[in-house]
Length: 149
Image (cartoon, rainbow, N blue to C red; front, top):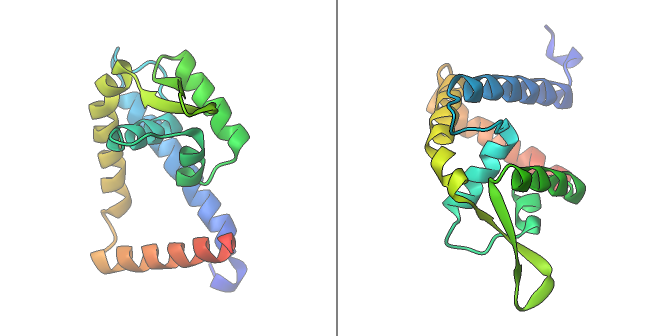
């Protein structure tokens, strides 16, 4: 297909949707009794929380990390809390803030999530060179920076 007929935004959305579908399939295929309907989006949040368990993480941090709206993250976190994956705890210095921490359940399924994410990442990178990956990251960072200005 001629590149002048393709639109970058549309292609990024298409690839994003494919990644989401493939990620969900991988998580389902690795599903054990330990994972109770953890979504692909949940897996990224769990990984973020566990990789940053030495820091206080708040909803705003997750919004910024994943570039998602407050209402979206609020709904996702509420569902994760209902599933027993996270806890939201008040902090003494500001009654408005709720620290978000992973539960024991999150830690138990973390290895399965890492395995699933690594499998997906391997699939994403198996046909591109290290140089192409660097170029892709450079381009995506430029696009993201330009859109955030």
